[in-house]
Image (cartoon, rainbow, N blue to C red; front, side, top):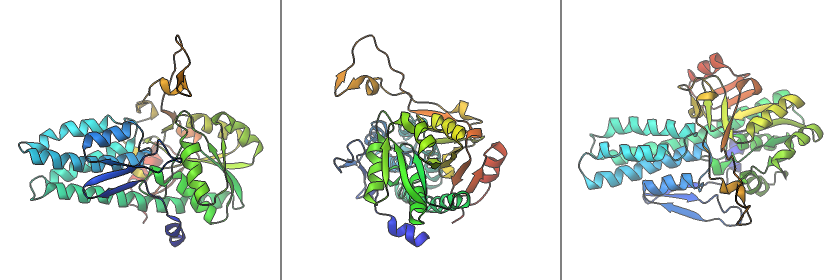
Amino acid sequence: MRDRLLAAEKLKAIDWRDSTLYLLDQRILPFEETWIACDTVAGVAQAIRSMVVCGAPAIGISAAFGLVLAARARRAVGGDWVAALEEDFSLLTGSCPAAGNLFWVLNRMRERLERAKDHDDPVAALEVEALSILESDREANLTMAQLGGDLIRRYQGNSQALLTHCNTGALATGGFGTALGVVRAAWLEGMVERVYVDETRPWLQGARLTAWELASEGIPVMVNADSAAAHIMKTKGVTWVIVGADRVAANGDVANKIGTYQLAVNAMHHGVRFMVVAPSSTIDMALASGEDIPIEERDSAELLEVGGKHLGGGIEAFNPVFDVTPADLIDAIVTEKGIVERPDAAKIAQLMCRKRLH
């Protein structure tokens, strides 16, 4: 199966070459395929904030290379460049506060810096670490795709309809995808009849990115308004809702793109299984529950502007980027370390003690 997954891997959105980070601009897909070159840490942070790059794993990977760029620039200036680098850590930390992978990556880069700062070329050591993080994420995705596909087969082996939210494919990761990686694996095994994709307001990542990824691989895809999801679960034979995660708390609560929580509630009501697919780096054991996860709010203009025109004065908008799905609404969390069914604090702790499966 792994060979088939590797053969199906065709798309990437992150490229590091010639000491520059190149990001496929997800704001203008699928109409244009344009790469943005980032050669400063400020450029990387801005790319994250402005959603050139989306998806917690991809954000974390981008931040790793952002630290490489920052370290190279600080060291060239001289002085106590390691201390000066704290400003760059803070800049990247603030670029997407809810992305658990971001904090995991920055901690990993900080640890590597501590070991390498007295070496002849500490920047080269950081670059190797960033490349390792990129490759590790890709490998984790392939493992999760296999595990998630096996889980689908265990409960419903026949061809079925799946529903997903936001983008969790190769564009959002180091390659292949988390939740969308599972969808791909299930398709290759003949277990998928159709994939319903929430459009994902207000940035339309589902309609623009997920649908594009699936259609380019010949996987039957149907885009729907976010508000149609419950009706689809009731009438279209959906057996699984499969989503990613931006951060998972120690008790199994999951923060993900806004709209995920209502999908989980609707899935439970309709007897549809709910799967979260995310690398273990997304799990933050320092957060006891989803109540501790910071929820970013974006500019109200994203909701109040239609066709470039503002709806008018006196109107306010509430525009949270994420919401939190309680663990008791989740059937399974799939990671590269294994699967946690009906997650709770004890099961999550046990999972985090394991080594990777691959």
